[in-house]
Length: 95
Length: 498
Image (cartoon, rainbow over all chains, first blue to last red; front, side):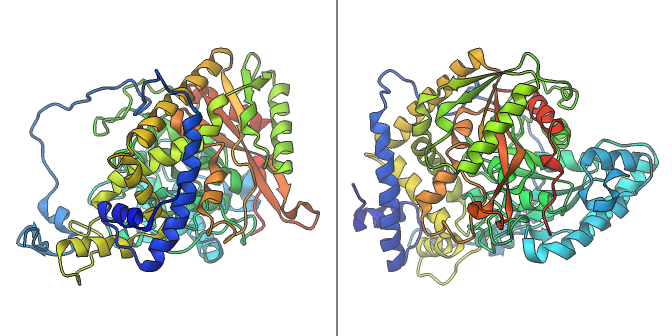
């Protein structure tokens, strides 16, 4: 049960990770080998077993709806690739 | 001063704390000794991504002022190394990734705040596998770290820099993170103690997220007592982390001491896989024998039947969570940002193509696939159900055992380059540690002996760690057992031939 080249390209597009031709071929092989191993889980009977999303007995953890200071804008923008007038400049989302 | 002949940099935290408190040494002296040690050996070990000399000397001065007026904690003035996956305000935090090569966090992680408040002295940020994905530190986006016991071998990963730094005397203790074994395995391979707390015990606020339901921060040190000391400071509820457990934190150091009479130890059969190194098997058997000699009763027939499914379970869950957590690295708000593309999407894709290393890309893709429409039930949901089974088996074992004992790694440190081209082989390094993260339990690796590289008398001796696993939130018993074992042996006193 290997991945096809198309599947690799599809996953890469979903994950927004650019791949070179060489990468596509290499990952196709490596990911297929790893995915093959996952078939071992088919052997496990999980018929009436509930899923565990995390191991703590915590649900719906909320914080109080209180106004607090936020980080200073200058600090937040300090790592911005292209800061502009207090904003993060990006390429147009809609053409 | 017992350890004087070895140099101040090899003091334990608790011994250094005593000397500082008695004003026999100053934090400035201790910090300078550690910085000098880094200058001497880090060119070969490469434990550090960033050495924070100025910050360290500044903090050492502040620590000396605190010591002078008696405002001290057991960590005041103690040089510590922090894995570069933990945010440190004003100090570059890279996760050993080119995508964050110049990222400077505007805030401290919870654990960083705790260390600052305690007066610890940060000497630097340690190297790691990129975004904590790896078992050898070879996936660092910058350079690999070398095992101080044999520089041609890996220190383990992903907290390889922290483990190597502690082993080489480049800090007195360190913080690492563990998602599938990333504190315990490098601790084992480098001959130091490393503890992964129960999931939820230590706040993840400011820990750059890899797998949110598995990640935990923990201490590495040359002495189990030092791990307990560090836990006294970093553990505890933090409202900023919604997965932080609102549990009382015991005094972890108070638990240490005495023999192990009455302790019920279980040895799970499935943790001794067929391919495991014969020398490692021998070390672990003898180590459990020592534990038995301390008064513990040992059940060698404990079984955790779903152990064989843990690898698949982990390599579905962790990459799935990672694919979501790493979506934020898009070149928009911080980090490396490719600008030469035709469109926003192309910029994003190229940012991630050039910013991430291979292993990170592999895991993001695995996770994206496992969560995608048509595959979610077969992979992610299935893995979560298997996760329940794994946890239930541990719970059943803990009905008749207080602690489980087993290897940390099926082999000692392997050679640099040996497994980089075979990701699946690399994943097998963690078969003994992954299930513990899946179940959310606390576990420690404690130095338990050596094997000879290449099996022969000419080979370099390589460390082997014993893993002790405990019930949820029972770090106290894990630490107590590990400490008793340590005090009955001399392994933790060995130093690498640097």
